[in-house]
Length: 422
Ligand code: AMP
Ligand code: GLY
Image 1 (tube, rainbow, N blue to C red):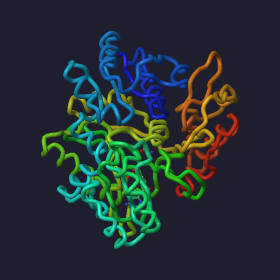
Image 2: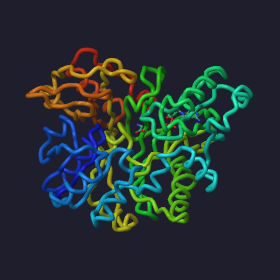
Image 3: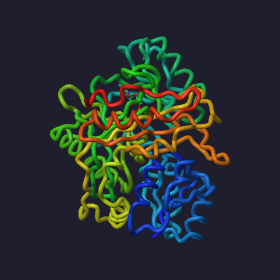
């Protein structure tokens, strides 16, 4: 069978690499892919953008693609899966209606409330209903969130009321475009964060291995929020007891609630959870896709054939399959371009990849492209150096050994990925 992966990041490189290891798969197409997928065995990039739904349908039809897996949120929220289904093609991901869980934080909040799923208290405002007095009366820190998709730039944790007012007003004034038309003012939650990612088939759920991401740019979890600077699996914060609580209090009511509301959820579902000191799993956000960079360490540990799992989900048989995991830990360190996240610099040539290929672990590409024989930087998050080892410390050592042989001017990465798991 031929598989199509939609997207061009590190998550998509990992998905393509994993699908290519399946003996059932003859070829993996990636639209549009990156330099890493271009060089992967059994994988071919096609120059079709992830948001060009019509072109993706034509591609899948011309190439007789048997299974499409969608990486990023934008095409899911835009209705890519609905369009594939209307054309009789199999595509793993949520349809447009349930993808609103990520596409609209206001929608997600209302949904959480209706189904009594634990989450931070919040109010949603628009330019018409906004009242700065409300912000001045709140305890700080306070969290200001754009409701729509904002590519990781939609959340501000304000330490003072003045900062909160400035952030809310900038969003409502159009700083983030349509994404900030509605703004959530949310209670700040304490605790330890975990990424809880499952596969769902509309009614059944298959939880994937647990993971934890480092969202902040700088060591010690300081500095601005990013898309994620590194991740590891498993996450010790998700003990068996916490795992059971997240399944019972978050995932099961979400999947059942969506089905009951007439929008059954098929695809990867990612709950960003803040585990409170008493163990309450408060939902920070839902993503309608696999995490990036969580995908890289999680898929490195997956021993099952991911195409079999996706097909079981598309057939509504997820309760009849199991995922088996390597018991070792995996850890990925994101290497970013100078200036990330605000203004990453593109065009620098990356060296050392041939040497890295001879070492244990794997470098997944994200913002890279081929230029003649060179691999050059073409995005903010550039590579994810991923290692696997008996312990988180060993996986970390392998990942940093890989990162250490790869160079380009201004490359930046955290030195402490996984510290909470050591
Ligand atoms: P989100 O995109 O909603 O997950 O927000 C991005 C990051 O901001 C999260 O991963 C958390 O680290 C942080 N964050 C979001 N909401 C809250 C909250 N209510 N309390 C504390 N931290 C938060
Ligand atoms: N790593 C966080 C995300 O994928 O949203």
